[in-house]
Length: 185
Image (cartoon, rainbow, N blue to C red; front, top):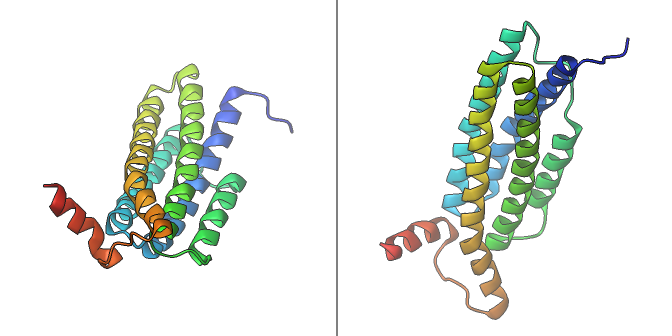
């Protein structure tokens, strides 16, 4: 039977995002483990906790709608996670690998921002004000994560580029972030 209401589309899209968050909950620990920058690793770990909260918020929305959150596979996130896995398993090392991990993570963030923006608008039109509030909060957190990734990429990309010019930093990757923060103080 064809679905033809905005509410049915809204629920379908929520299921898609819920599955995306569940996939990301599995992928983020792998990304954190692959990161050589301590700051990037900590960022992935923090975003994992946020992602778990995003899934809980979606569960609240489903509960209020009397719906189950399961039943749909997010193919877009499957592809984005696969690209992230390719970066983890690839031949890149150090800051270059970190730059690739940031690239993969930002693709995920941009997908999530688009998805959350869409369902937030659907919720608004449908008069689901509690859902609008929860979705807006998640959308803002996704934007903040993207901004933090951009900030991290500035330093990491510069370090990655220094390998091409022979200006390698002799500190171990795990301590580099702390050392730079201490020098900046």
